[in-house]
Structures are given as C-alpha cells and as structure tokens.
Image 1 (cartoon, helix red, strand yellow):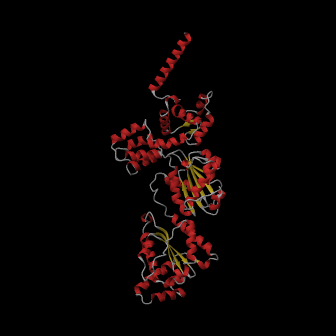
Image 2 (cartoon, rainbow, N blue to C red):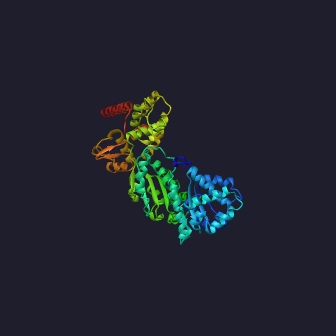
Length: 532
C-alpha cells in the first residue's frame, strides 16, 4: 500500500458512497447525506449518471478522487453487478492510493457478506449466473474482504439517527488523520501546534476560548491557519475570520458595527451569502447546537469579541474559539485567560527560516554562513523580517548581500515597516510619545529612569508602559524595558516622517544644530529688544 506521503494533496470529494439505490437511497442514504452536509463533508452524488451493465467512467473517476469510500451493504447490494464492480474499483484504490474504506451493514449479517451465505448469498449467486468463473471469483473475494472490515451494524443500533451521527464523527476523525500539507516544513510550527492543542483540550466537551498573542510579524496568523487546517475536520462548522483589524465601517455606531460583523460572520460560517439580521442574538440562535471551530484573527477591539464570541453559551458542546491579537488587555477584558505567547525563534531556527527563503534549503550555502548569522541579527529573529529579507536575497551574490545588510542597519524594509507601524498608529498620543522616547533614549533602561525623567511632565508613564507591554510593543525583564530592534527602527522612521514643527525628538545632527542656532538667534534678538 502507498504511504500517506504519496496521497494527493487535495481530493474532489471527501466521501464516495457505494450502495444499492432501491434499498437505501430515499431512506438511510438521504439522512446520511443530510448529516454530512451539516458537518461540511462533501459526498459524491450519482444522480444523473445512467446505470448500465458496466461501471460508468464518471463513477470510476469519482471513486479515485474521493478520500473515503463507504460501502453500504444492504440485502440487495450483491444483486447489482454495477455495485460489485464499484467495490472492485474501491478496493483497487485502497491498495494503490491508500484510500480509506468504511463499511455499513444495513440489515444484513456481516458473516453472510463474508461467506456469501443466507439471503445475501442467494442474491449474489443469482448475479453470478452467466458470468465467468474469474469474474465471480473476484466479486466473491471482494465481498469477503469488505465483510471483514469492522463497520457499523444497523442491527446493533436502536436509533438510526445516533448511528448516522456516529458515522459522521468517525469520518471527521479519519479525515483529520491526513492534514493539509500546506504548512509542511515551516520552522518551529510543530511545537507551536502541540502547545495549542494542549490548551484547546479537544477531548473536553465544554466550550473553550483560547488566544494566541505576540508582537506583529511573530507568526500568530500562520499558527492559526495551520491549526484551522489541522483541526477543521473535527468540527461541524469552521470559520477563519481574517482582517478583523480592518473591520470598522464608517457610518455605523457600535451596535450597527456589531450587526454588520455578525452578518458577515454568519454568511461565511453557514456558507450562505447575504445573510441579514436585526438583533445581536443571531449567532447564538444559529450556532448554539453546533460544534464549531472559529478563528478570530488580528483582533484589536473588544467590540469585535463581543459581537462574534461574547459568551461560550453561544456555541454547541465541544466548540473552540481561537483569538489572535497583539493586545493582552482585550483578552483580560473579555475574560480569556488561556493564552499562548508566541516567542521568538532560537538563533538556529531563525537561520533556518532565512535559508528556506533565501536558498530554498534548511542551511546556508557554502560561504554564506557568517552572512546569514548577521542578517538574522539585523532582523532580530523576527519571522516576518526573515521571510521578507530572505526572499529579497534569493539568487543574489555575496556583494549584494553586503549591500542589503548595510541598508538594513539604517533603513527598514517598507513592507516590514507597514506591518509594524499598525500597532504604533493604534496608540493614543500619550503612548505614541512614550513609545518614541523609549525607542530613541530608554531601550534596555530601568523603568524607574523613564518615570523619573517625566515625573514633572504631562506624559502619563505608568499607564503608558502597561499599554505598550499589553500590546506587545515592549517587553519587560524585571524593571528593565526592552524594545525589539525593528520596532526601534520603525520608531526612528516615524520621527523622520513627522512635520518639522511637530518634532519632539531630534536625531539628525544638522537638524539639532539648526534648531540650537535658531533658538540662540531668537534669544539674542529678544535680549536686544529688551535692552533697547
């Protein structure tokens, strides 16, 4: 059998059903399809395919493009050579591609299927009349094989609805065993996902809200997307709500904004465009009985959480809500205390990230090791910067690397600056001023020094430091304040872009001399006027 690594990356259908239409199509199968739709499981529909003596090419293709085949063995399944040929193709796909095969014994004894005895055997023998010995033997072997696959036996259940729900959950679990390869090879991702799965405690039937927090560019969204890809098949409904930071709409008051957010959210998670609601209980009404996985990415306002996930009671048992944010205070206000703080990668991991983008391999090319280490230092091990700078270095020679390093020491890449600047621009004037002063004067200094420097001024330092810390713009180690070097560079560029008359901090030598010279001239002029 092929290894899981040889599986196709995508499947057109999650499930292919093999069944005898008159036995189950209007009853069991219709209920199964409805349950699958609720769980977001796509199942091939053979309506419109004309039945004949040989299996249609469209069915063969559908079987090969399905991740799982379900064989519904009813009393007349073996009466159809079509069904038996489907079964042969299904088992061939299991052998060649590792397709998962599940069985449902619908009103038949599994032993009768294995041995082709009882009423099931009589039907099978009738189908074999006029067939070659070889063809009959292949069908018999296939039925014996599939009859030995442990599956759901309808006769063992008192409630068909419960059996169907169990089948759907089993399929979700099996689909989850083959996650997307989209995030394969991402450095350090496996450790992040392991930590998140521990926090999510997926075996717990309660509803949990968990947050991923860290500075801009650290990889929060990547972790959330990989988590969504890995776990989505274990939930009835899933939704990744991105760009929440840009979700504010002009012209709406707070209530109107929450209504719009809920409308967009429900339209997405229910896969129904243009949903309109008139009250804020709509999320609870629609999802209170659904096991959902919701990712709320880049949250920067308490209103967003109140609109989309205000209470755990809004969602069905087993639901999980994951929030990514740079702002710890929002989480505290909403009562989310299960948080995963994303840390910076270790030096060797940072070099590997850079090399994956610069060289498309895990380690530096010969002669580039020292350059790689210097670049990671200049990027401060920030994954976003390593990715963007690494991509810009691809295919360049050593001299060009030197040029880029020299530029990185004084000028921040525009795309990196734009992402880092978002957090700074969300601050009030007091916190912006404090942020800029720390970047230029007080990085790696004791917080008591900062408080003392502004003790007689209008700057509110204690509250400001707390806000900067909560928004991942600074770190504190004991009483020492630390700001990431790329945030420092962003701050310096923000100062340079200020209008001259708004400058509170002067960094340029010529600018400082000019201000001092002009100020001296003003004082002399005023002194002359006074003496005159």
